[in-house]
Image (cartoon, rainbow, N blue to C red; front, side, top):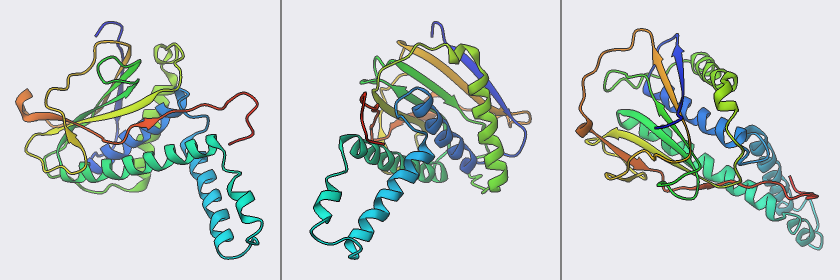
Length: 242
């Protein structure tokens, strides 16, 4: 792929499928904010959405009078609704990614920013450290957090990635390449999918120094697409929303 940026991240501690899923989720969180698809980091979206939910729960328990209730509910403007939708879609996506990694042998993932998978504006191809099939050991939160932070630091410090031209708010599509014999729910098989050759592209190689040598063939793997498409949005000038 012409002009592809390549970033290699060496993980110093043990790997497992659960760690790989955490790495992918962290990568999605970082990219959707860093590439200006949402105006706030994921943890801030989460806080705001939870605050809104608490406000509505208080309304339903009678904290606010019935006469005042419709006025408060109308305060949820279009941008607030978009924030809630993005947050809920990401939460749904992350949950199913975690389940997939626990039930299947995963080789790589593709994160696309654009309206179509054929000609996206940007593509991020993530390859994961190989683990022995069936190794779903849960690593400590310390190891997961350390590995995710190391990956994010590598992305932040890469000057070529930082020089990607700005793109408008668009859709995020997620594909995962797993063993074709895996029993996978929710994700949709896409046997004809091929990594796109258009747009800005980055390959993120996650590996360890003692990664096991596992032989496989191209025929063993198939792409699966997440049915949830996360739609980015931006603040409107002068908006009083989030």
